[in-house]
Amino acid sequence: MVLLVIICLFALALAVYFIPAVKNRVDWNWYQLKSEIFYFFNPPGEDSFTPGQQAQIAEIVQMSQTAVALAATDTPEPTITPTNYTSPTPTQTPSPTPTATAIPDSVRLEGVVYEIQGFNNCGPASLSMALSYWGWEGNQYDTAAWLKPNSLDRNVMPYEMVDFIEEETDLDVILRYGGELEMIKKFIAAGYPVLIEKGYEVADVGWMGHYGVVTGYDDQQSQLIFQDSHANNGQNLAYSYEKTEKYWKEFNYVYLVIYPPDRENEIISLLGPYYDENFNLQYAAQKALEQTESTSVRDKFFAWYSYGSNLVLLNDYYGAAAAYSTAYSILFDEYEGYNPYWRITWYQTGPYFAYYYSGYYQDVIDLANDTLSNSFEPAIEETWVWRGRAKAELGDKEGAIEDFQTALYWHPGWDVAEDELLEALEVTP
Image (cartoon, rainbow, N blue to C red; front, side):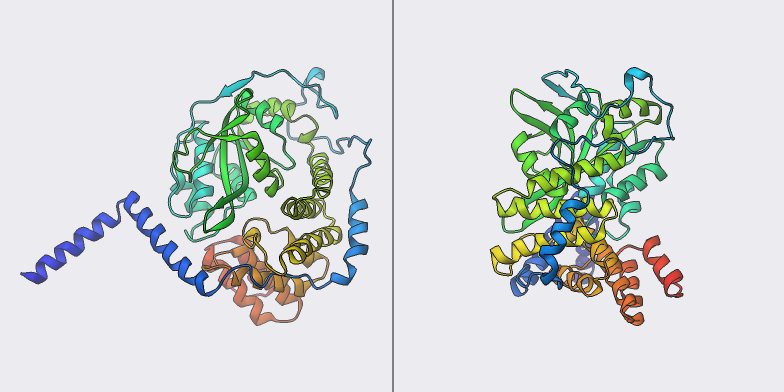
C-alpha cells in the first residue's frame, strides 16, 4: 500500500512537472543553482583573453583606422544597385542625404502576440512575437525547434533568425547595423515592429545579451515600447531613449525588420541609402570608430569591438583583428586582466573571423578556450567550430574532429559543423 502511494505521488509530481509553466520554472531554478555552484568555484572573467600579437597593435590599429574610415566631410555613396526588386518611382529613389519625413510624436503598434520566454528561450520568443504581428501562427517552441534544437544553446544569432524567416515563412526580412533611434521610429510610424539585440544586466549575474521587439515610441516621454520576453511585466515595457542607446550600442546597433514581400519598395524607401549593405556597413564602421573617442572604458571597449565587427563584414580581417585586440587590451589594462564582458563571444563571434583569416590561429584557440572555460554549460557551437578550424590549420586533425562533433552535440544537424567534418576532414558526421 505504501509503495502504491509513493508510485502515485511520483506519477503526480511528474505530471505536474511537465506542465509548461512549472517545467520552465523548475528547469530555470535548477539551472541557476548548478551555475551558481560552478561560478562560485570558477569565477568567470578572471583570466581574461589577451591576443598574442600585442607588439603589432599600434601599427595595425593605424592601418585599420584608415582602411574604411570616411573623411569627416564625406558622405558615402551606395555602391550597388539592388536587382531583386522593382525599381521605385523617381520620387522614392534612395538618396545619400534623405530629407527627414515628419512622423507623429508617438505611435504604438498593436497585434504582437506577447510571450514570456521559456527556459533559455529569449531569441526564439522574440522572433515568434515579431512574426506574430504579420499573422504567423507559431510560437517560441516552433522557432526554437529550428533555431536551437538543443535547448541549452547559449544564443540565437541574428543571421539565424534571417535564415528562419526566409526558409520557414512567407515573409522577408532586412538585417542592418549602425541603427539610429530615428530609424526605429520611422519604421514604427510606418507600421513595422523592429527587432533589436542589446546588452542586458542582471544583478549577481552580470552582463549578457538580450533581444527585444520594439512596437512603439513616445517623444514626450522619450521612451520606446518593448515587448520583452524576459522582464517582469515585459509586455509594453517602456525603455528610455537613453537606456536603449546605452545598451543597443553594445551590439553594434543591430536591427531586423520583418515585412511582407509585396511591401519591399516601402522598406527601400524607409531605409534610403542604408538599403545598400556596403553603404550601411561603412556608415556603421565610421559610427563605431567615432565612438572609440569616448572617455568611458565600457564605451571604448564596445566601440572598438563594434568597429572590428563592421570591418569583418567588410572583409577587412587584418584591420578587424587590430580593432578587437585594442578592445581587449583596454579591458586588460583597466581591470588588470579581468573581463566583465566575458559572455560577449556567446553573441558576437567577429574576433574568430578576424583572427582566423589573419592567420592568428593560436589567438582563435586562446579566445575559444577562454570562452568555453567561462561557461558553466559550454553550449556555444560557434566557438567549438572556430576552435576546430584553428586546430585543423595547426595540424591537430583529431582535435578538430572532436570540436566539430561537440558543436553538433550542442546544435544537432548544424550544416556548418557537418560541412567541416565531411568536406574539410572527410569524416562522416
